[in-house]
Length: 415
Image (cartoon, rainbow, N blue to C red):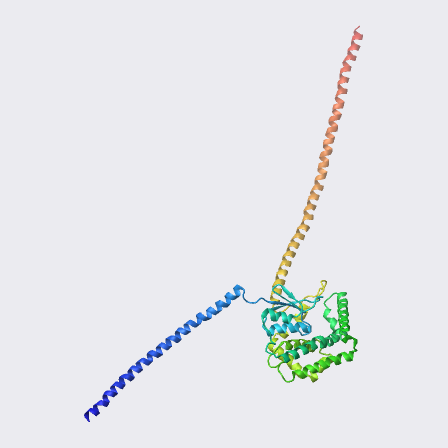
């Protein structure tokens, strides 16, 4: 029994030592983990710096893709561009995050838009060109039927509905459209709109839609818009939850219709009956055009509006340009003041010069009588000397003859 009683304390002591060793070992493990965390935290800044340095090296080495230069029409009437094709291509670049830069071409006879990339200019099939250069295709996840529907609707909008918009802009509402050219001189602001109108009318007739009357043209456009609204339905975008190429095309036409032809019969149909198309445009702006109002502001429109070389109108200053303009005006005023001072000093000198000349003339006038008197005296002395010279020989001859006569008389009397 004694052995049985003594055994448990021994075991208890062993357990206590084991627990102590475990307790001692645990802090060491925790200490090691804390050290590892500290080392990881110390290494994080190095990794971040390495990433930043790598990005800088990529920028220095020029591995970043160069910009695409998008030549398009400048802003007009609260829209970045009045041409649906220009809005389409720019929206596509924004959607795929393609680096680009706008180059505005007002009053050009070239077809707009066109792009320039790495010295190569492309004027047709711009979307396909961008897909090949940047290896991107937002329609890659669509099946063949969806791609067919997308192409059919895009062709309808670009080749049919577009001309209903052009008819309203250049025929039915021409008086409002030609105000865009008000910055030109008297001749060009009347001639240029007429030339553009003639070109548009010829295109309408060549397309066959121009052979219809006004009501028929608007009816054709309305049917197209109702088909678009039915196809969109309640979807976020035309082909589902993700934007594709068709969304860029539809946004280009609908935005031009709602912003440049807001009083047209087609715009009234969209605003009153086809609300889902209006919501679609607002959704595209929120996703890709947060700077819409800045790009289409009145100041931007006036700055890029075509102007004649003979125009005297001053450009409106932006807030960023006001301090620089004020400093330039201050320098100009200071320069003018210095020039005025110089001119004033020059005039004073000129006014003083006649006075000096007047004194000289007075002195000269006062000296002239003296000189004349001296000259007259010299002449008188010369004349007196000449007279004396003439008189002296006569006196001598007279003196010589008298003694001879007297001598002769005496000689005769003596005889």
